[in-house]
Image (cartoon, rainbow, N blue to C red; front, top):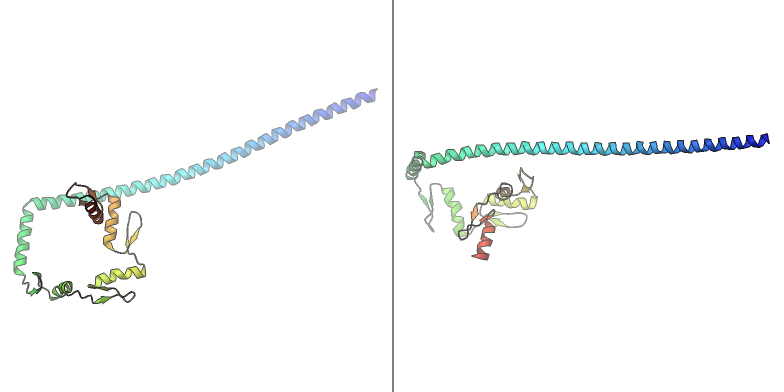
Length: 217
């Protein structure tokens, strides 16, 4: 009889130990889960902080560029003001007088036989005569296309070489010719210098104005 009591007591003790062990395991597992969750949250916070710092850096650069552009605008406005004063003042009259006197003093003895054009340089007349004769002495060795002026041939050769030396400082886009860059920069400045004489609509590019005139007027 005493042995039976001892067995029941041992079984009860074992059951108690098993329950305690189960609770300890649950507690340990919960702690590990909490620790893992904290680790994940910590990594997420670190990533957010890194992203925030990167955005702050970009914002600082944008503000610096904006300040630089503002300074350039102020400098240009000052130049425009000076030129405006010159145009509206006596300075312009003096400039016109000097220019007219200079024209009178230059002997334009080289005259075109086909039109009223005249010049004081024989080279200028030679280049002008190509318009009338249609001669194109500068030939591309790659494709055979011909040009009146060597400068035009040099610009054409970039089609074959792929060279684009004119780069937009705003977006990095590259162009073969400087006037293409000038046209592109109006996208950033918002300038629209070409105005329709009928409806006053403004355009960034001359070809857009021509298309507008052809379509609506």
